[in-house]
Image 1 (cartoon, one colour):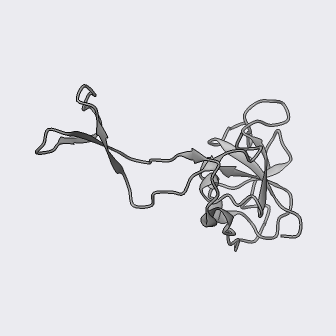
Image 2 (spheres, helix red, strand yellow):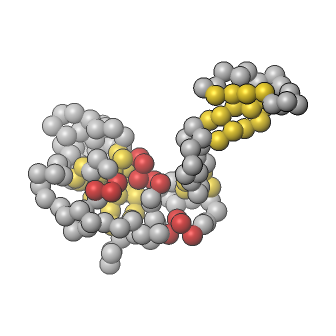
Length: 147
């Protein structure tokens, strides 16, 4: 559904973890939890994300690309015609082919700037690899025409 642009990541919480009130029978085994003066129970959870199909303005902010492509810094995959990028901020501005980016790219994904090509697998339906080694999960993307 993400690739088909039917759902996407909702607007991020940028200030750390969040606290949630839980039922009285909920186990308090989170890394951080508390019971307030009224006996209400709370747990704190890090890295809260949600999926949505609601639009919000930040979803359409362009990712500013400033790195220049060169063969030494951007190795190609063994099993897919694409280059690997280890950090979203390092997507080269002057490369128009397919690029493998970390899953954290979804935080910056603007569907008007990029298209999602494929998730994780190469042409052989195996995990993407570079010199026989698989990097962490990658999403294959391409810049939209005219950008």
